[in-house]
Amino acid sequence: MANIKSQIKRNRQNERRRLRNRAARAELKTRTRTALEAAEAGESLDEAVAAAMKRIDKAAAQGVLHPNTASRRKSRLQRRLNRASS
Figure 1: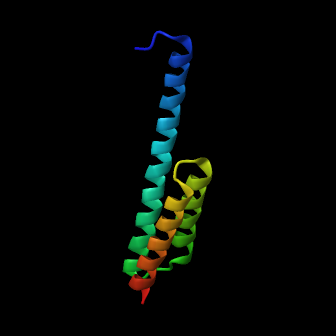
Figure 2 (figure 1 turned 180 degrees about the vertical axis):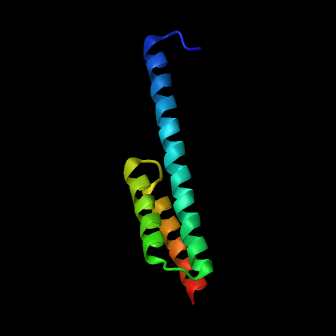
């Protein structure tokens, strides 16, 4: 347990941010999985893909993901969707 006042505050901030980041990553995984399942089932991809891409971009903007990581994930997702739909 921290004794210094600023470190106690920093711990509170870190915990809040950790929970926020966890929620964002969980939603990101869910949206990605939904898009992939839609592709495999042959359903309409427009909404699912748009939601997944939007969530990836949002996570990068919020600092949850590094911008290069977001770009890589979008690229890989699009490749997998293209393979599944063809």
